[in-house]
Length: 323
Image (cartoon, rainbow, N blue to C red; front, side, top):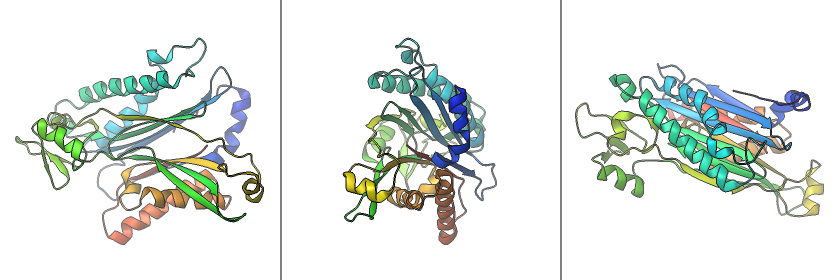
């Protein structure tokens, strides 16, 4: 986790950071090290606007932990130092959303090149890679980019039918990149890959299978159609209601009370849907719990789901950001 504050005034907010930020990264039951990584970074730009970045990586293969850590170390630098961002004097992140969109796309391309080099021979590296789901919030916009099956979901606490009843809206911001998807499968098979049992297989020895259609690294299966091109999207954030009791907010209008972002690895999504996760976090926030407590509750629920299914629990990582 990376936290960056550019002024003494901003530094004073550290004490309340857990109210609006929660992060859990815990090892599963596999013999490998924890292969998940995550970071959160925030700062004030020159105009006083708060910028924040959140990202989760889920490594796989013999050296997946090294692959996810490499993205954690390099991606924030590649994004914030991307030349396309240097379009407005004095600002780290410009106000034009298209420029930010293009910069994130370019930074992911550079990250992909770096990861292909890291995934070169020997075989252990060729068989290792990572997912990456990334979010950047700036000036009322939320930019997301995704490679793999880690996921970002936007939740909104909205007034319900009665004065005190509230509902939680769920909006997935990313889509899982899976081999059985029609478009993904067409690309893979066109490049010589074999899609079978929800995995991508190479057509030459050694036969390698991957349950993703996009990832960073994984040079062996990238040769047969697995891609490192991200889906990049930009979403408008709602104007959150001012802090106050729920009844007053409900009486005022139908505007959202609070929005929150949940970013997590598939250790969460394996047995929980986007709506399940959003409802869990939303319920915690409605009961005046902090984002940190909400993230812990979501991770605990994911862990219980793994135990109920009797499966070897995967690594579990989640970030909850109250916007």
